[in-house]
Image (cartoon, rainbow, N blue to C red; front, side, top):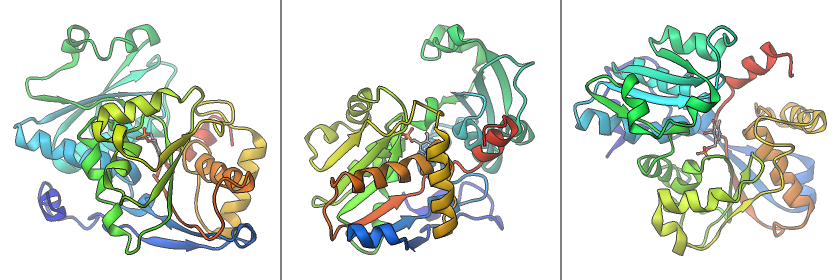
Length: 311
Ligand SMILES: Cc1ncc(COP(=O)(O)O)c(C=O)c1O
């Protein structure tokens, strides 16, 4: 499917996506010290509200909805979910109604992520943790479905996420030695494994604790990943677990942003950049490497972290 076909889903808008997303060289004294070159694939700049890996992962979900005549998208997430935020924006843009099943109590959760989703017309249902665990149970889900509903898995990670992410590889005009990206549910990594050239390596930084399951998840989403070499998931840069981070890490990320001009947040992009530099410091990346870091977006999450007084 061409980008033109994807764009044709919505009437022409002044906020059309920036595809290919820019590729920015990153300069930092440590990179010279380690003898490597770094570029950032700025997927965060694709679109003001529907950016990063969300744009890539949702593209073929929306095309599928159109193909099947579905006019309603249903998905799941936490109260600060980048995915919920993006899905609401995507539905609004493509003229599809959206429902978000949110883990949390309605009265206790009011924040900028959910306010934006509501403004884009998303219907929100708040469920407790126990109910949220039933999100893959069709009987439980039936209560939220409208007649023509496409269910998008949490984080947008389904096999439909794979081709959209794979397309970003061809946007980079050279073949890097190494791709680096954050990973959680594995959809973005699966897409990159599908798209990468044979000689290219991938280092995925797990942003959560106990990320060993992600390997199997990638193989479930993209079965050929099991026989594809050159990709690995680093499990020891989670810095306490999902959405947790130390002040030391956040300080590092802020200094890095100040020195390079690259905006980062501590949950995905900042943690992954920090993880990359820990890998460099540990000598796990050969000098001379040309590295492309994928900025998967998520900067909307900074507002929520500020609201919670965490940054
Ligand atoms: C901004 C951002 N980056 C990276 C990820 C991780 O991507 P994935 O869940 O596909 O592994 C997410 C979560 O989906 C995210 O919101």
